[in-house]
Image (cartoon, rainbow, N blue to C red; front, side, top):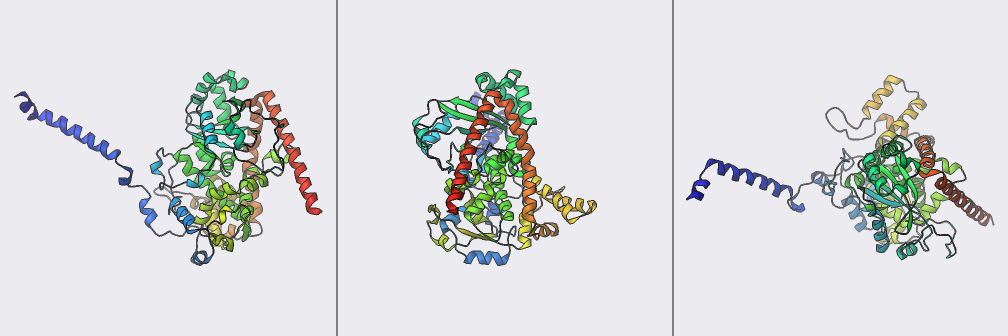
Length: 504
């Protein structure tokens, strides 16, 4: 009798209805992915609108030899229409990326056992790491002309066999970059676990360490010559906001420049993946502004890889291999193709113009050096200028304000028009008369762009290098400089030998 009476009560029905509402909301929130409607799904079905394109080039692209159709299909799936417009870099769920294949080009392949080693290193840090990449010559080889021998010094105290196999002897320190949410909190936890990783700055506490990281140089705090699981590593700590900002705006090109070259993602983050795709596209567009109408793959990748080294003081001192950029591209051609081919395919003002590219497996041929052709139409190149990363683009505008002698009031109007958004909406980034005038400066544009790159890189890179004297400490800093001098001399000797052989 009590149950029917309870069921008929108004309070009981309210409780049941309330619980039913919340259960329904939970079921909808956690519905299968196939039933979810993604933000850009409708955009992917629309015909691609003009961004860097024109009808004449689109028709020429369809007639020019390209990579295999399967590769093109993958690229189109990864790069849906409108993906660069008004992106949200604060997303925390991979399902909110433009599509499920987005950013697949950023996934570099390494041996499975070496990948497990990289993950094991990352797992030795209890402080939360939101994003982690391994990079540098310890992960991806660089052509140096020096063949490793068993007698060569290995920095690793007790390297696993996977490291020795992957590095063909185990002679390179492995570099890591850790992206964290809260700088001071992370260092506070890490100091408790790994006080020996820090120089004397660690004794001053996490507040001082985080201040040195965030307020000086490019926002990175490096701990060099650290042994983890028998492997010698160097790891840099950087705030996720700093990563995303540099990738999308090029404030310093310190993080963005490293990410423009192949890196191995150990722990991924959807916001960083989206931001880095913008960074990679910016690198391609910048390189195109430096290159002639027709060029080769090697020239394109060398221009991209060289962006972060323009203005770097280490390149003008005897502390870096003078052939570093060409060594990176020569040894990592396959990875550069993986990283940039989908972007090349996506840009309608750029296409492969080499008949060899009609072969479905041409990209597997590392001896191939395919030719590419870009449109020199000022309107299309003006669109590329307009879509350069924000901070970098503004510096370029200021250079051309001086070159074109544009009055301040008129230039303010140009800057206002070039904003990515207004008070109510996002503006589609298409070049106007000013950008087209910049693009038409065929003889001077390359020099101006190089000057902007140098001014962007020089100061952050210089202060970051000086900061290394504090974060690494005197002993480790001296060791680092000594090793750099040695590599610089070896690289110079190899370059001189190559020049003599060419002359002979």
